[in-house]
Length: 208
Image (cartoon, rainbow, N blue to C red):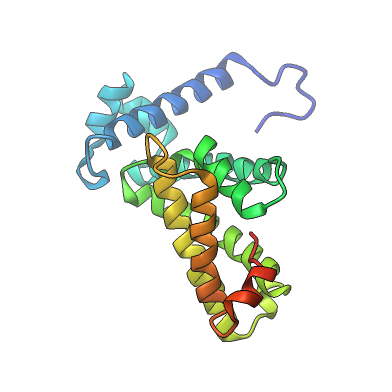
């Protein structure tokens, strides 16, 4: 960590460290596009990154450490994306979310084909969705819901994360954001409010 009193925090050594760690992450992501995480070797990664094994071990203790570094970086980006969603224009929160995901994705890790990495970020996204579904659909914080409603909120968030993840990975949209919003809302109503009539549900559409 830099000395708070240091007037030149971006020293050449710090820049080299940042550059090397970035090169390692990028090389790892490139390898993950063609290989499963379990089949990648440190030698492959060093060759891809253009560094020696000695340099690699100056920064990481192993491949799992590299994967953790990637996940930390992408979690930060995902968190920033989710914060930016809150300011997306529009009156309907669910449609805003669908539009946002179509335009920006749900974070780079979600779109990585290797599930070992994507699965580490998904729980964060699902928890974020679940908390908003609880407040919007039941008017109550997640921790205050009874067991049944909490389970329904988590179930809907999991399904919504799957749909949004597929949409983020798709090269082109197969349906308009409005059509997808209507489809998602209808499915969410069925799960969140199974005992309410269709007429009543139209008056209180769940929002996330």
